[in-house]
Image (cartoon, rainbow, N blue to C red; front, side, top):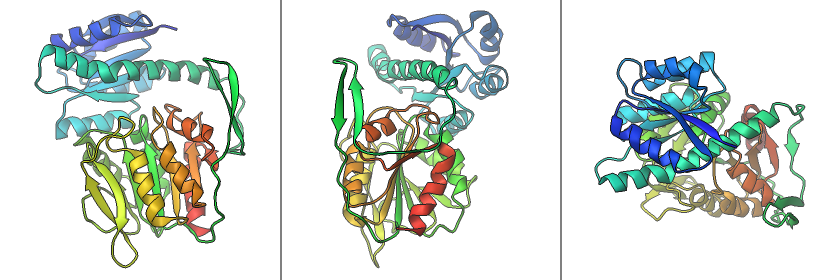
Length: 371
């Protein structure tokens, strides 16, 4: 399956770098380029791309305006944004993701041409191919009949393509708990800003517990995400700060480029600890890092949620949470932008229930009110 890409950037250097990177892959076809959004829009009808790599800040017509055009006229065409590592770039990127952009990559600052090319290639190819898989799977899923929420029943089976052998995955043994949850921990990645924009407003204050979130993002972008979400929700949403004691009805988003864990504070309240520990699963912040700390401190009194995203970050930490008897909720395949992180957790036997994005908030509330 070949994915057709239109490269849009007002800088000739980036058009060449991105074009050359994409052309190096056999299953990616660069169908054209454009140096601003207006030209890109004029070429969409004739070139019929599946995906745009889209600079956010451009003259004449910027990336956000192109996204709005796609949303109205070509919702089947995706976009991966290129953003500058600035606060303005972060704010515009969050708006782009909320408008439906598939994902983004930050533009490197400084460095040689070879270093910049390697920096972009590291993220770009994996995200284009993830979009291609999602594009293909989405076409299949739209033809399926709608089903009820999927209660995960162990044991789980999975088939590996390399061996075509079915493997039974034993579920993680769990204790039976008798107390409701006193904290919610969420791990999320690709498609996260849009998913959180839909889900978090459904959690109306007061819910009586704090929420801690790892969203895979670089520095500056998590602050922009928190500010954007705070304007849409009745809960208070902020980028977490080192040393602050967790408060009920506050959502704490791990700062990009750092690790976040929850440690013992005062009066039985957890406290945020921000560290510069190494990446895990190539992620910083990492959901596994956060989940481990929650499992250790809260035992059976936590709820964990794993949502849309590439890779397997979160599964190991969820295993520890599940062993204490705490509920684990996963976003289902149909509503995920990328069914990677939830799929790994389901296959590992650590998920109790998989539901659509619009059902996650209701399932969270159940665990806060009931054991």
